[in-house]
Length: 323
Image 1 (spheres, rainbow, N blue to C red):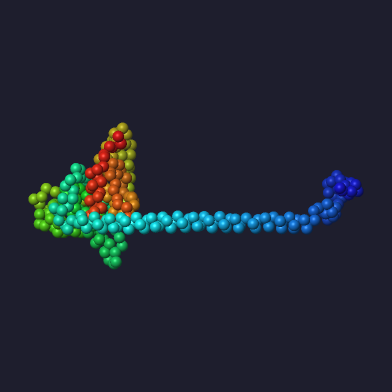
Image 2 (image 1 turned 45 degrees about the vertical axis):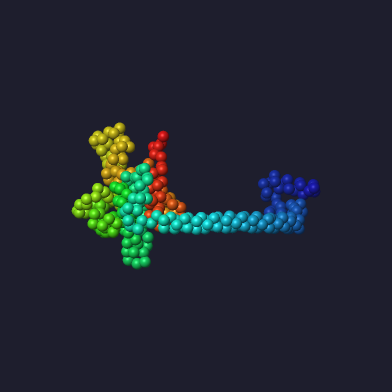
């Protein structure tokens, strides 16, 4: 307890608004009643000791979590590797059994029991970097020509090819020559007529008239086609509505679908991806409302067997149209 003299001195200093005692005198007045530094050091040491025990438990928890994470990674990696080997072995066996040997009769035999074939088939391909020069472009053109020959063999009249970078749009004549040469290797001199076109680019049509009834038409699209077309169509419809040339009530799904079909391409019945995962790569979304999408897990190559499986899947699909 403070002494009466010190208490009285402290109160007199308060009544004088701190003018009676200096700061040093006030500190000397209350210093005897403050806790000793030793007790503070002991309390700090005890707190530090308590805190040092927690990191050990945290380290053990982290170690257990890391062990569990590594085990999950290990088991999942083993599963993925076994699945890839299984699919690769299965794919190789069926590829040998169903190889077409560039013979249209064998390809027709593989699909003759299918009840339905798509009238518009679309594929997504990629421009892979080649060893040098235009090696990647040559592989891409050869893949396009192979798929076009398969479609022409079974009577699919329209094939659309989507390549994200738009490289094919710059080589429309080259694409036409490559596909025509592939047709010649499959069909001989009586090959189907062929037209190759791309959005916003004049079509390229060969003039030789075939006695065959098939007609093959190709659309080459890229990432910018769908975006630019939707933007231009939106601007056009807005301007026509502002100038009272078109009523907002006349803008319907059918109108937009007709304009996009004329500008880019129609809606495909079947879209085949030659990738292990479903990656649309910016494919125009308006054209995929009712499209059947097919891919084979763990596959990264343009293979005849993948194309054939896609046709089988389409033939078994039920088109309910939301019902």
